[in-house]
Image (cartoon, rainbow, N blue to C red; front, side, top):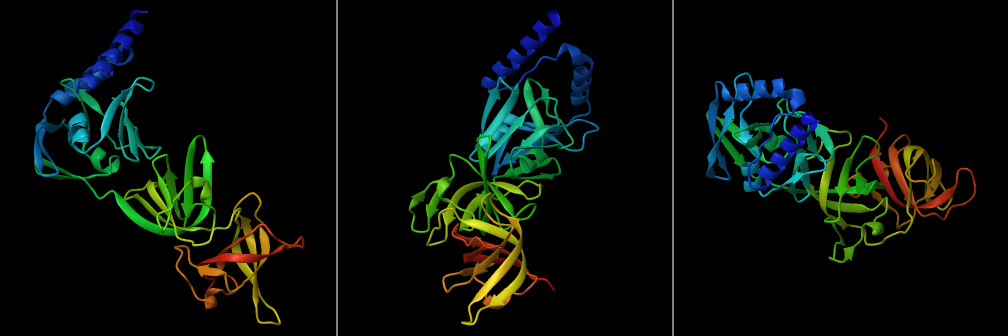
Amino acid sequence: MKTSLRTSAALLTLSLALTTGVVSAAPAATSSTQTKAAQNKAGASLSTYAIAINGTAITETGFQPSGTKEPLIPLRTVAEALGFKITWNTATKAVDLNKGNIYTTVKSGEDRYVINKMYTSLGTAPLTKADKMYVPASFVSEVLHQTVSVEGKNIVITSAAEHVLETGVITAIRNSGGTSSIQIKGTGTAGLVLNVSGDTVYEKTDGTKLALAYLQIGMTIEAEHAVFSTRSLPPQTPAYRITVQDTKAQADMLGTEGTLEEIIKAEDGSLSLRIKGSALSDLSQSEIVLRLTEDTLLVNASGEAVEQSALVQGATVMGFYSPVMTRSLPPIGTALKVVVETVQP
């Protein structure tokens, strides 16, 4: 019971200290030996570093305990100077940081940092010294996605460009567990996953506002997203703005990705494509014949127009079509958009 009370008191102390601008934590009874060792290590053979953020020097300094691979910097001061909101999370007993679509959480003593909903290790755990929480300098670049460099005994931090533009064809839209994402420029481990939130703006090219429900697979979009992405396959990144490039919208668009098995030429000279591979949605077909019309858009994965000559047998393509199909095997429908991904040599 005494151990439990001491642990609770320690957590309360950390919460109160964070609220007032410092982070302080008493050692848990179950790990007192490890905590004392860390504190002794932090206080021995310190090498201090001056810190400048966006060209302005701050009064607090960083330090590097002997045996560590990089300097440590004061979390609150640096994060707030970069525009991050920092709060104590009583449920997880950790520090939460947020700025726009960038979110992370830090827990004292744990080399486990959240990057875009995924965990990563930096090789150094946060620690407390003189009632403040410190994190490794690489936290700024790897987690907060800002620019940091160590120049002698100086740590230089600058705010990085946050937004980039990327255009691509939607291959999947996912809604799970209260989170939503849009995959473009590929399927499976290919392409890019755009994590969207309530702050993401959806619109047409003329500025007309849209809702996420308006988006369909097969649409070409321009995504304004963070300059950073996860190292997963496919990489993931927060999206700030989605602009639909298509002038016409087809409700309930279906899609099939696979090999262009056959190019069929009718007597009137019109072409049809037999595609065999994978269905891109529940109602889509794994094999289908799609008729090309003068309205069929031929593009690459980035939504850029390609010539009909790019349609060769053996190419990897994605065909997008409406739910209106024949009952034949394979079904026959009309191609609204064909994306040419790769060409079989």
